Length: 278
Ligand code: AMP
Ligand code: MN
Ligand code: MN
Ligand code: MN
Image (cartoon, rainbow, N blue to C red):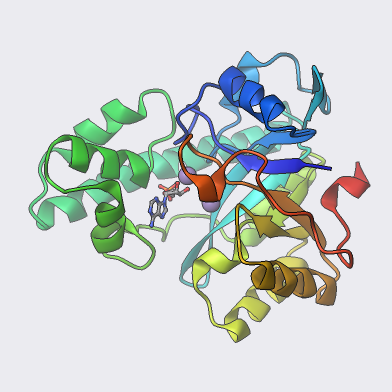
């Protein structure tokens, strides 16, 4: 089973339109796909009536999903909601609140960038975001486009990346809140890419404990092309905490081999896949 349950489109910070993403997923042999844009489910508006459960799109089963921003202690984390109802008022209200946070946060990010000598970044990033909820990648892109920084990687490494001065995260809701929105919409809450927060083993253990206590259902055991030892370690983490396991590429754009659609290893045998619940 190739289950890619973590992908992005132009509805957030990805480069492909939803239809293009689905077509590429089909070519890659993906059987189950979730589009999980940051704090929006707008992609689903263009791919048919998915409001009541999964959609069969040719050979692909599409699971309605979203990637919601949250804060745990002082670290920004991401929580994937899978198999959610697209018309649940409490989740829709949560998404609306997230988008207000994004608007306010963008102003703060622009102010912090201005203090570092970068000009006009709010207008530039808003233009690049268009209808999508504005995020740090739009700032990174604008800094490159306007010739103020060499490339996006450098923008994150120096200013926008985790823990840097323009990584504004204090207004995101706590995991309990985000998990409640997902649960109320009938979905499963999955802690996204647990290894990307660069936590110590002890902290990751505490995050996983807290996530489970807050009602979280699973963790992303496979995220893109990753070391098999990491997969093993995250599989053990899920099993130890009695959590389900998910897999996804975190695809944003073609040409990134470590995050190509559907290029994800199988889950370890001792894991219970999140899709066994569906
Ligand atoms: P935001 O939603 O505004 O918090 O931005 C988070 C997004 O920025 C992630 O989903 C990635 O797409 C992107 N991102 C985060 N860290 C990096 C990085 N170090 N290099 C490139 N992109 C990154
Ligand atoms: Mn992203
Ligand atoms: Mn993420
Ligand atoms: Mn993602």
